[in-house]
Image (tube, rainbow, N blue to C red; front, side):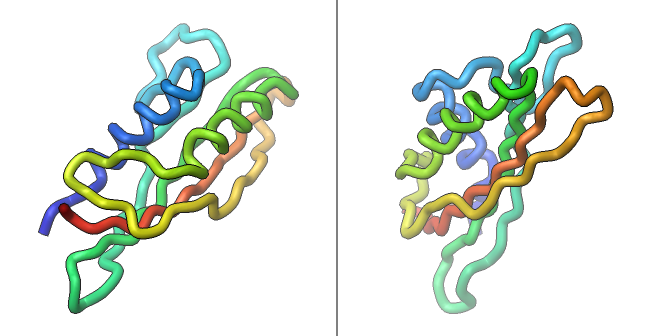
Length: 123
């Protein structure tokens, strides 16, 4: 059994950077100016008992001044609602699942949580 979570995170990072998404992090360094895109939240499920295949859900958090955070979220959508290259895995299915807008306490910063689904199998 091969865990796809780390190669998936690396593929998401590469896809976002190639689409021009700025400030992509797993952990945002203190003092980093907005916008930020935070990756690394994922859920990996065994898709089938008879075959080694994984259903992966990846959350991407986009933060930015309102309403510019939605421009950054649009870049994320373009980058991840398309095939990406995951080292040592083939993608059987991929796609956008949902997005949620979350109010931050200061009412100045927008936060969009986007979920993408990838059905993958080891190569």
